[in-house]
Image 1 (cartoon, rainbow, N blue to C red):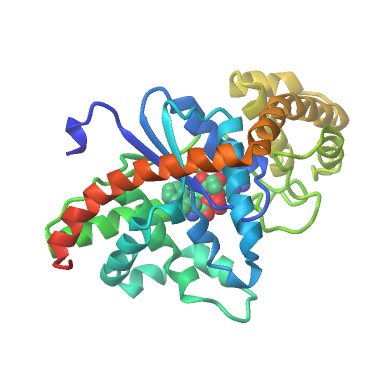
Image 2 (image 1 turned 90 degrees about the vertical axis):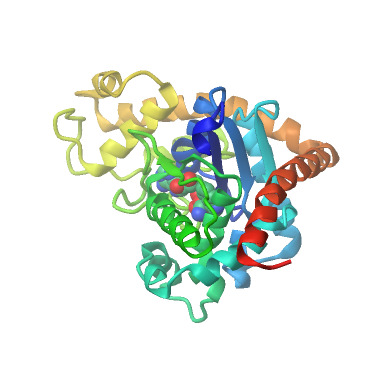
Length: 333
Ligand code: TYM
């Protein structure tokens, strides 16, 4: 089925929880934009996934965060002429397929999900939704017969289980879902926290020096980078990068473009002060147009909502075409 398509279908999404950071931008959105012309693209704001931490939900805030994320997709260069951008909860078929996939996914597979372990750690109550989270993600992807899923490295296990679920579904019901493949950046698929280069940069970390947010003002970006953790040396040694220094060069490389070698050469022998200023300049210059466009798009909320609703209708048509066959295969009405 996938082979007969003129273009590959790409599907990816981001949760509208907290502010997007440069890890999301580098690991995911930059890949979407780069490959956009080649493919049939679907980019989703996955608000149903955000419900997996129900204690943290404020209904109006969640709705508004979804619009922020949509505006950021567009501001980062996602072109509505080439890509479908919509909010997951507006296409009901995601929840419907997720239920069917819940029923076919063995608990043993789910027990191996490493993100569940880290995401549930230290929480008094953990909902079943957090446990089943990867299955909703599988439904997102399979519903559109996606061939490629451009994401950060942390999502690899979720894409692998999506392939397994598709296979088991086919084995049980004879319906064939396209098996999706992960697409990750060679450099920058895992951006680390500025305060702790051993930990992935994450939306949920509360320390202010941990992540650079896409909407941070220039002075904040500079301040955060200046206090980024490096090591006990004073200058960059390109032949032996510690995790903190490697992370800074990786961020520079993602924003400045060019090759990894040229990024390394640019800073080899530089003091850490100069490295941090150089990285800050590249990040500030890269984010400036994104921030400007974000405000233009977000300020016209009614226009943005109209656009997203139209896109959701188009997505729902595609999703419904899949679901008609899936319902038939499983025997529900
Ligand atoms: P989320 O919202 O946690 O992250 C969104 C995207 O950003 C990437 N990412 C990173 N990349 C590099 N370095 C980092 N520090 C970093 N942090 C996050 C993530 O890998 C992701 O690509 N489960 C997904 C959302 C989702 C989804 C989907 C993705 C739901 N359905 C279907 C693809 C296809 C998630 O929580 O992403």
